[in-house]
Image (cartoon, rainbow, N blue to C red; front, side, top):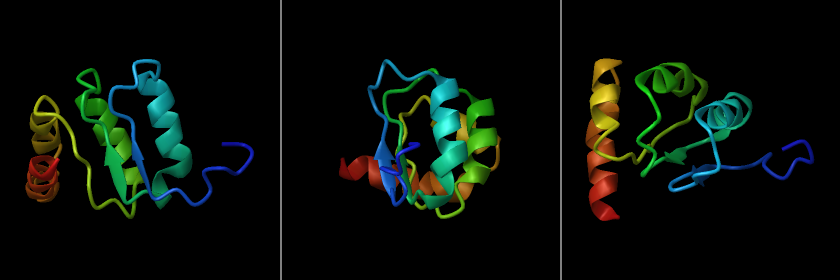
Length: 94
Protein backbone atom coordinates (compact mmCIF):
# COMPACT_ATOMS: atom_id res chain seq x y z
CA UNK A 1 0.00 0.00 0.00
CA UNK A 2 2.86 2.36 0.72
CA UNK A 3 4.04 2.29 -2.91
CA UNK A 4 0.70 3.52 -4.20
CA UNK A 5 -0.32 0.36 -6.03
CA UNK A 6 -3.79 0.48 -4.47
CA UNK A 7 -4.44 4.20 -4.83
CA UNK A 8 -7.29 3.73 -7.32
CA UNK A 9 -8.75 0.42 -6.16
CA UNK A 10 -12.54 0.15 -6.64
CA UNK A 11 -13.29 -3.41 -5.52
CA UNK A 12 -11.54 -6.20 -3.71
CA UNK A 13 -12.25 -9.91 -3.24
CA UNK A 14 -10.83 -11.19 0.03
CA UNK A 15 -12.70 -14.48 -0.09
CA UNK A 16 -10.81 -17.55 1.02
CA UNK A 17 -7.68 -15.62 1.97
CA UNK A 18 -6.72 -17.64 5.02
CA UNK A 19 -3.56 -15.62 5.62
CA UNK A 20 -5.42 -12.37 6.30
CA UNK A 21 -6.59 -11.70 9.83
CA UNK A 22 -9.60 -9.61 10.76
CA UNK A 23 -7.20 -6.92 12.00
CA UNK A 24 -5.30 -6.70 8.72
CA UNK A 25 -8.54 -6.56 6.70
CA UNK A 26 -9.82 -3.79 8.97
CA UNK A 27 -6.58 -1.81 8.58
CA UNK A 28 -6.87 -2.13 4.80
CA UNK A 29 -10.45 -0.83 4.93
CA UNK A 30 -9.49 1.98 7.26
CA UNK A 31 -6.84 3.13 4.77
CA UNK A 32 -8.53 2.41 1.42
CA UNK A 33 -12.21 1.84 2.25
CA UNK A 34 -13.31 5.28 1.09
CA UNK A 35 -12.47 4.22 -2.48
CA UNK A 36 -14.23 0.86 -2.46
CA UNK A 37 -17.48 0.23 -4.30
CA UNK A 38 -17.30 -3.54 -3.89
CA UNK A 39 -15.97 -5.60 -1.02
CA UNK A 40 -16.31 -9.38 -1.23
CA UNK A 41 -15.70 -11.45 1.88
CA UNK A 42 -17.52 -14.64 1.01
CA UNK A 43 -15.95 -17.53 2.90
CA UNK A 44 -14.80 -15.47 5.90
CA UNK A 45 -17.04 -16.78 8.70
CA UNK A 46 -14.78 -15.37 11.41
CA UNK A 47 -15.53 -11.74 10.57
CA UNK A 48 -17.64 -10.56 13.46
CA UNK A 49 -20.52 -8.17 13.81
CA UNK A 50 -18.11 -5.70 15.44
CA UNK A 51 -15.92 -5.82 12.34
CA UNK A 52 -18.81 -4.64 10.17
CA UNK A 53 -19.89 -2.01 12.73
CA UNK A 54 -16.39 -0.52 12.51
CA UNK A 55 -15.64 -1.12 8.83
CA UNK A 56 -18.78 -0.19 6.89
CA UNK A 57 -18.79 3.49 7.94
CA UNK A 58 -15.27 3.77 6.42
CA UNK A 59 -16.60 2.59 3.06
CA UNK A 60 -18.39 5.73 1.88
CA UNK A 61 -18.92 4.63 -1.76
CA UNK A 62 -19.78 0.98 -1.04
CA UNK A 63 -22.48 -0.52 -3.25
CA UNK A 64 -21.94 -4.26 -3.00
CA UNK A 65 -20.76 -6.46 -0.16
CA UNK A 66 -21.23 -10.09 -1.19
CA UNK A 67 -20.90 -12.16 1.98
CA UNK A 68 -21.68 -15.66 3.10
CA UNK A 69 -24.98 -16.58 4.76
CA UNK A 70 -23.22 -16.64 8.13
CA UNK A 71 -22.59 -12.87 7.96
CA UNK A 72 -26.06 -11.72 6.84
CA UNK A 73 -27.57 -11.91 10.36
CA UNK A 74 -24.77 -9.67 11.67
CA UNK A 75 -25.52 -7.07 9.00
CA UNK A 76 -29.23 -7.14 9.92
CA UNK A 77 -28.41 -6.62 13.59
CA UNK A 78 -26.31 -3.52 12.95
CA UNK A 79 -28.97 -1.91 10.76
CA UNK A 80 -27.79 -2.43 7.20
CA UNK A 81 -31.05 -3.90 5.89
CA UNK A 82 -30.80 -1.80 2.72
CA UNK A 83 -27.69 -3.73 1.77
CA UNK A 84 -29.30 -7.10 2.45
CA UNK A 85 -31.40 -7.03 -0.75
CA UNK A 86 -28.35 -6.04 -2.77
CA UNK A 87 -26.29 -8.73 -1.07
CA UNK A 88 -28.79 -11.44 -1.88
CA UNK A 89 -29.09 -10.39 -5.52
CA UNK A 90 -25.30 -10.23 -5.96
CA UNK A 91 -24.77 -13.54 -4.17
CA UNK A 92 -27.34 -15.25 -6.43
CA UNK A 93 -25.53 -14.10 -9.56
CA UNK A 94 -22.27 -15.75 -8.48
